[in-house]
Length: 350
Image (tube, rainbow, N blue to C red; front, side, top):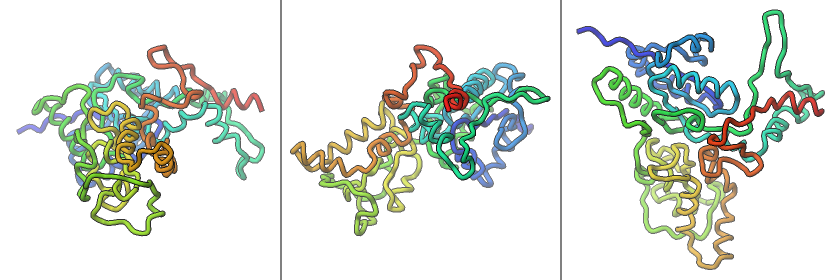
């Protein structure tokens, strides 16, 4: 029997830490199945390819693209549109692409403040405050740094996305599951999942896959894990006063953090039907506060040391808030945000 032809696979890493690429490599022996089923035609993190190579590809030539990372620069936006045009199936892969993740927290501040923190503070390396040039002419041509956009956006705020795979990063076994499912569909052995589906995760919450015992919760304080003298290894962490994001977080990780005695931090994103992760989690926390007096309620909620990090650590850029009031740029519907050549403009002011 003739083996099916290999499908073309692209993997791109935009504004993210690169953990999603590492999670792919952590497939271990299963990566051999990937190599048997897919021909990798574009993966800048692992192979020598040029953007011009993708620009020359016909529309829909790539069968499947895993796009990790948010859209922070004009280069990210260009590749998002390019890979959308050249891909039959475009997957928002990992929390940065689906929600914005940690880089999205920069949306709380204007882009000028973000650049100043990175480049404008005195360091032992750059005591003179030298700023990078956005453009530089050399004999071979012009070198250019990507321009920063005012806010970080999720992939689906820039282009249409076929599927989403949550996780920071997605668990390797779930990646193998997704590639197997989409590979079978491309082979014609299975139907493609419905457009817009979340793959590599369930529909319920981390609480439903957590093995800790639960009872009706009434909390009189929230505390850091270091503030508790001991932790019951079998009892729900939220019942013990630890702010655990399990009630709002999509299942799919195997509840590994609660199993190890650490609260869920929400890296698998909102559960099915949750419109805004932070809003849903705030509602869940408020419902278990053991107080009726407003002042007492405030005292208990003040035990949350980092409310933004608790409620929007992974999801700010993809939330209803999108960012801070001063930081948020125009909506996608209103038109393309103005690109900010931040290094050049701020450097000129110094």
